[in-house]
Length: 119
Ligand code: HEC
Ligand code: HEC
Ligand code: HEC
Image 1 (cartoon, helix red, strand yellow):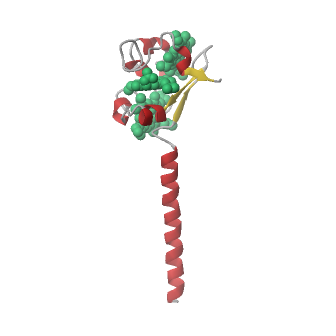
Image 2: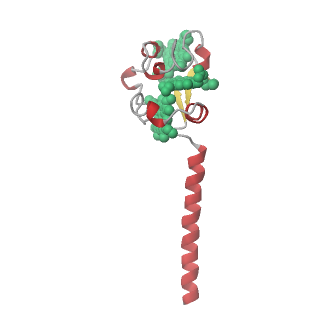
Image 3: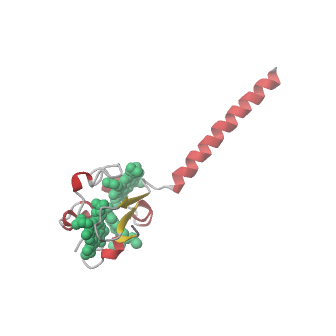
């Protein structure tokens, strides 16, 4: 009887342990919100926003963008069609950082740096 109980405790422990490993694994695989696809691009190729490039490579912190510039929800920015080249060029959304005399490359003349994802 005693032995039986230890089998059960060990089994439960192993299940919990495996679950924790899985959580850690998926956590490392995806940084922040992962890759975000923007597909309302008319005749241009789609745009992929990479959390990995911005957070890991460029060392941006979550509060640099959330929630001042972007809500933490895919599709929220372009609700009511607010996310356009016009609003970006006016310095909103991606244009908070991407523009002339800003910290990241300007949209002008570098269209395919962002519009590089096949439809
Ligand atoms: C350079 C800006 C930027 C930074 C820094 C950033 N994010 Fe994001 N995040 C975005 C954008 C853009 C979206 C997509 C918004 C949209 O689709 O309208 C997004 C979306 C998300 C989402 C929603 C994903 C989904 O599928 O709905 C989560 C979660 C998220 N971010 C978490 C984080 C966390 C955690 C960090 C810090 C480790 C972080 N982000 C840093 C720009 C950023
Ligand atoms: C910093 C990244 C970035 C650069 C650089 C960029 N775009 Fe965009 N573009 C976007 C995003 C993000 C959207 C919005 C997509 C969405 O809402 O799904 C967009 C949307 C568009 C659209 C759809 C209609 C509209 O006006 O919103 C067109 C057309 C477009 N871009 C053309 C261009 C051209 C031409 C250039 C170069 C002169 C350019 N883009 C450079 C990110 C960029
Ligand atoms: C908080 C500032 C910030 C915001 C907001 C931001 N970026 Fe960036 N982004 C950067 C910086 C900094 C770099 C690296 C410097 C450079 O390439 O000029 C960068 C680089 C990039 C790159 C180049 C990746 C490569 O191939 O090296 C792309 C593409 C890009 N951003 C797209 C976007 C799009 C699309 C948005 C809006 C959805 C956005 N960024 C919003 C700061 C930002």
